[in-house]
Amino acid sequence: MMDTRVFIKIGEYYVTQAPIFIGTVLGSCVGVCLFEKQKRIGGLNHILLPGNPDFEHYNDSARYGINAMEILINGIMKMGGKKENIIAKAFGGACVTSSFSCENGPGQKNIEFVRRFLKDERIKLVSYDLGGYDIRKIFLNSNTGDVFLKRLNSSLSSKINQIEKQNLEKQKAEKKQQKHVIELFE
Image (cartoon, rainbow, N blue to C red; front, side, top):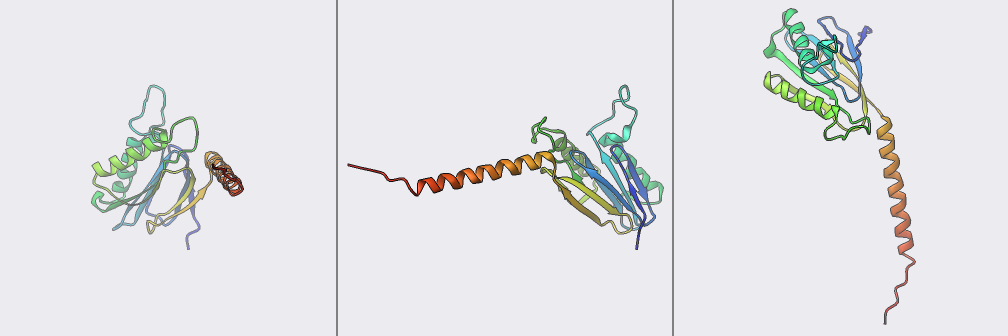
């Protein structure tokens, strides 16, 4: 039984052939788990933004999708893995803040980037849990490629649930009032 764990944060990644759990917590960020089936090499990244890094303003290139994915793939290949044996699982991309629209916010842009990148690189996306409103905590078993996921409610999710509950109560009250309405006609 594995008891070794590595926890990565935004802009970090980890690749290993050792049997460990690699974990992270994702909101609007996307985490991509890559697993090379033949050599049993697993890796996880934590993508903050899609696209290319802006080295004039930031020095942490692994925060950006293109570099985070390339670094992960290259890490697997340096350990003897072959790109054609890599499968992917992707998680995150939630709408966790009301500052952006969910349809055009950072979570959705990260999801679109990851899907496009994997398709362009011909890496099969075998499993995913993307979008929605929940924060996700994931752990990749680097020895098997299995991913364990736990959903955590975001503050936006709680607000949406509260609004939906209020609307339901309002509808129930309206129906109750309608039962006692008497209509007079001539």
